[in-house]
Image (tube, rainbow, N blue to C red; front, side, top):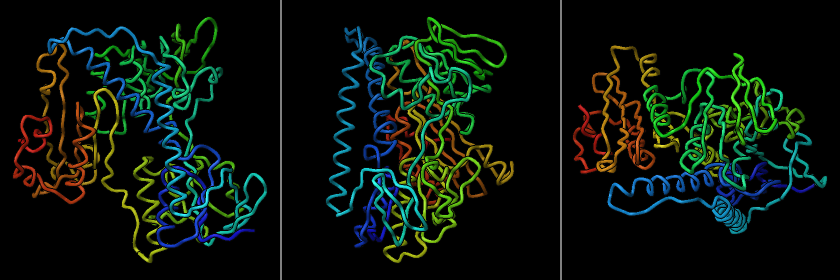
Length: 448
């Protein structure tokens, strides 16, 4: 049996960040990961998705170039060449993560790990490891519906394995992964039909964002089918989706399920360690990332809380600060977490939605500021999609509790405004800030 100060199960963003921070404090740490280092984000998530989103933006730029006098034409896309370059970039990142572990003397075991007892794990070869502290950071995986023929479709993992661009795609889902991948495929030349269960997309976000995005998606050529719950996926000469109300949609060469994610906990033997999970399999933790088992913790998507890479990293680092550096009250606040949806156009959002603010503070205490305009980059274009912004404020001093943006540049401009919201900025603070002109971001500080 080998002894460590810190056993980390999972080599994704949260696990790697926590292990490396622990090692900086002198802890002897080991990371178990059976797949490529970096987890979902690096391999089948944020990083390759952003590469594809950038490629889609290049296609948009070529399409709009004629309005600025350029004689260019988008003739074709070599999807496989794009994939090869993207995959090579990801492989390079895998190597960087391994070198980062080596540089901090964090041991790496390329294997699954499962609990053998309280704070004891065993690898695929049967070797046993004991840790003073154990972190569960195994992330999650995309799910498919339990309907006949579901296996004929792919998930987001399968999207990154596509060797060529599908011609006609059905994207099933209304969350951020669904709209992101649907937007990329549409921009890169696929015929996209989006199937949503209810009446719109991004239903957990501020209504302004979902309503505007659905309008812009339809204007860009995405066919959105509402009230559609698939009950079967048939595979004849092509793929056919059958919905709950009896409708049939055929002719697809690819069906992409983007209906949600589940935690990677089934193979961990958590019951042996006495670790409690919720009804969906997520590891239950408190505000300090503690599980119910002594000196066993969990961070990231496996907990089901704010499933975002920077959240896992922040929670993992703060956990190591607390355990190995004596920062006894160090923990992550899950309030005011900013996030970006890489749709077309991008969306940036932080804080409360308008409905959440009204529910928490009451209608009379909430003041809303909005702005809608055509950004300057579309001044010469025939198609002129609008950018929309919303500030949600509360109280007599109009403290900003929510900021929501949809439009070009939303992904970059939100970070600074997220700092302001986190610091408790008031509307007056924005009013007293000199605008940068001409930009879209200036609208945030000039709203009346």
